[in-house]
Length: 222
Image (cartoon, rainbow, N blue to C red; front, side):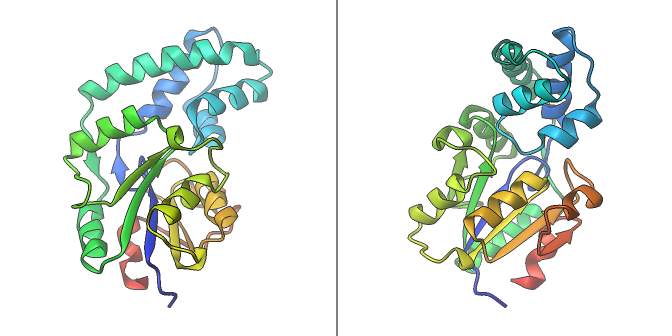
């Protein structure tokens, strides 16, 4: 098996169960603006994307006005902040043990997300996951100029830990855009998980190396 030195793991739906609150809130924010979209629409077209970009592309898809995106994004961010304060967040089954195990094998673990760093940090605080204990670095959409499916976040993770060969990197996520990000970076392994936003049929379109129920099933590969 490839010698994987770095794992780049998506957050919501891959390592963290936040009950799709992001996409529920996004759906609500778009509909509050006078549109009509379902949670299913939002999950299939927005999963994994940086959220302003997601709203813009969703509006384009439903022939809405893209100029509404910034306002909807503002409202979404505000509603999400409130929703997160009340939210029960938990690790996806087996994840915490998996992270600790990877760290004990001296692999680097980077959490990456299309969220802002503020929201990502809120999630980590709720889980009480600590840098250097559960993971080595957090990289968010705020840290790069191009968001997924661009490989910028993975490239930044590699640079942080002096990993030169992308073949030594594993990327895992619950959306097509996560897998595209991994492939664009040239990752040695791309793993899709069924614990989040998208179905097996949707994920298969991106041709991940493996599709698992949860990320902890990757332990046997590593």
